[in-house]
Image (cartoon, rainbow, N blue to C red):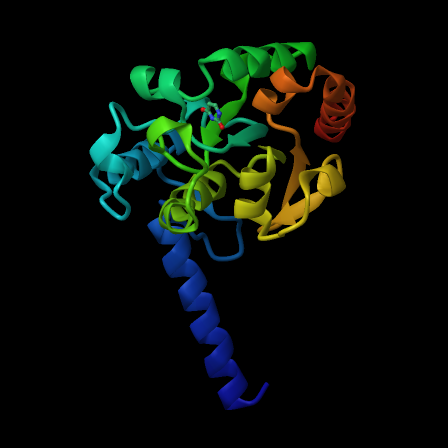
Length: 221
Ligand code: URA
């Protein structure tokens, strides 16, 4: 290897090591990175930054921030759009009508809500449940990326068009991409319909069930 190439490679390795350290991981020469902090404490650190965040105006109108529910070692992560009224009041994602349906979907897969991780693209409720604005998504997306980077789930299931677009950057209809396997930073992503859409369009439940069965298969359950 040329001296220049060596220097470039060394710089890339150093940048990678710095990134791992930021995530609380130690590098053992010749071995895999070893976690020095557990996922729960890493996620708590991200949550502290969400609580202090003033990157968009939604912190001014929220009752509570809504970070996540579930375990930081989950194999399956669900990503929704943004907290609604109930979620804002309780500080917990998916606890209203759509949330009750999501819990049923999880249980129909043979899992418990506590075994998965549930979060949203936005961590604060948009007033009157309006659609998240692009600048709000841009401001909040890095927190979602950090959550997923720490958890490293086997599957990420995005719920609805906003979550799929925020993660995959695709501007195509959810009807076209649902049930297909996509990737985000090497992690498998399966988009499906949002449970709130299912409450309005119960006929779509059979399509979502197909997607959930596919996820179960990929999880090896
Ligand atoms: N809809 C979402 O997208 N997220 C929630 O937490 C609740 C409803």
